Amino acid sequence: ENADVTIAASSAGSDVGNFYTTFPWAKGENVLTAYCPYSASSTASALVGTLSGNVLQAGAPSLDSYNTFVGTVTCQDPKSGDLPEIVMTPLFETAKMTVSSTKYTGLALDRVTVRTVSGAPLSGAWSYNVGTGAFAYTDAAADNMTVTLTGTTLAAEPTEIYFLCHEPE
Image 1 (tube, rainbow, N blue to C red):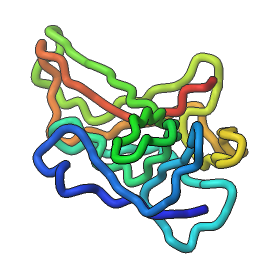
Image 2 (tube, helix red, strand yellow):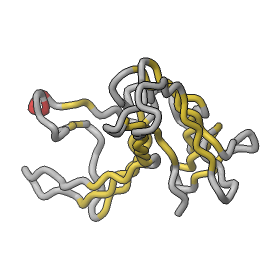
Image 3 (cartoon, helix red, strand yellow):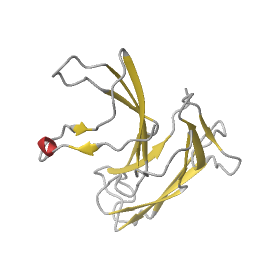
């Protein structure tokens, strides 16, 4: 079933997210798939998306440019009046790189390209089977990703660069 989850007002100003839903809990373990953006009309057993091979990081590092989130949620049926403890495992992991240089201080750093040594996919169209939890890139996947930076210069102080990637099982 596809049901929406709403952020609770108690989460305002907190680094912990509280959510609520009218979705009925089953007895025992509940495994749910959370995804964003939410679509009430979604009925497919698979979620699809694209992890871009070209990411823009303007100014301070941020993952705000990513508008897709998929994660699995596992929790036990809550006892009456108790909030369930939820563990969320994201489908995509945050990768962080740092770049610094004393020799080339002051030169512009306009892009960084990462390529997998094994040739495994790093970006492209993907599919996630909600029922089985299987993740796969399509044939159009690439073994690289480029992060384009704006207003960044090399310095002895490290520059942080972030991107999302799917870590194989």
